[in-house]
Image 1 (cartoon, rainbow, N blue to C red):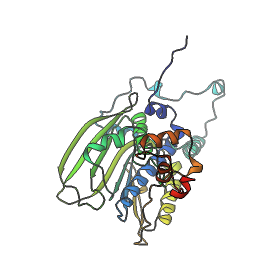
Image 2 (cartoon, helix red, strand yellow):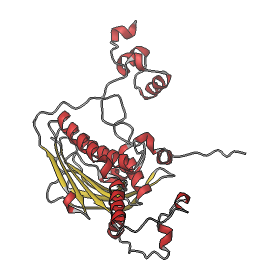
Image 3 (cartoon, one colour):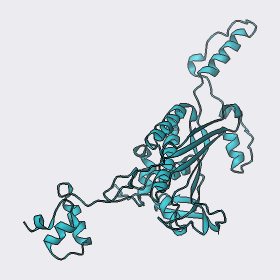
Length: 334
């Protein structure tokens, strides 16, 4: 008979990654960058700090990626296993007449131009000047799916605690490499943290739990505040280059109080390197979004039950006026 199986949230989203915008390598690269950038914006805005976001994207070929992670190059014992064999249609065709190799050379150039862009490996690093993360909170904030600080009724860029975790899951699926976080925490209105935390983090997909590979602290002599997240993922820069640059341009337009620096580096072809910078055009930031109460027209039985369990009031009139918005004490008595 059929066997009933339960899946963790991390396992579910790893198998259904298109739900979170990780449809293909190109879009996964774009979504990973976008999620980390917007996390940096939220972190800076939460302490009323003018955001400064530095993004670095390094592209590696498969050979360069293997060298980067410390793997020695392997020798192909049977090269035919790695070569593309011709289909049956090509069998039985007469060999082309000898024309001095001119036609073959033209066909090779044509094939090069028509060759589809191949996916590569990218080291994505995003650094912000936001509030940072407390040392003991880093594993759960970045290594446990559906764990976040934005639940509630308020306007936010994200809510479900999914974006940065999906970047880690995509890294685990595409390269097998952990995510690295460097952070110095400063609460709202407080001084810079005395220490800088470093965490190398993996995730247990089946248990939805963080796996801490390394976590250390060092003194914060430079009084730095913020977070830097570094992740190695596969992607496709060629097909999503214009979309990434357009996203950064549009983000700079709608957040004129932010500063963005984007660097793209190609390890095998430095001529393709590029840098884009969007300077801050305003010193005025919008007030932070505030958590509001549920409106009576938007609640259902589950929300009412949750509010009743959490309330400290002891009468129905006080409950309606304290736990719901737009309900005055006079209206509650009616």
